[in-house]
Image (tube, rainbow, N blue to C red):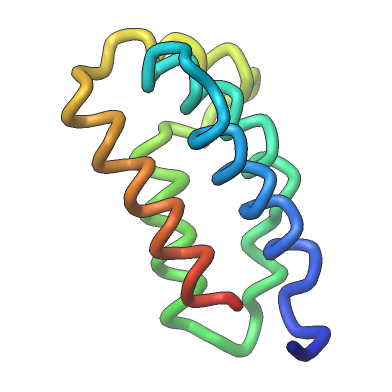
Length: 100
């Protein structure tokens, strides 16, 4: 494995572990996973416009474009249906697969 996207891989792996290793609701697991995703910046994907767009889409679905990011994530995740939360969890897993 090369050094490309090392930071992103580390944080997305931790996010996936948070999604998989808990008996909490999917919404609660998504909130925990987002704490790791917030440590990744879009600039880490400079040079790969496809990954940059996919990461931006993921951030948009999580509504991470406000000042108090963690508060918005908690609010949005708590109102998601199980289906919506699972869809985002799947996108997180798919994105991790693409950067590994």
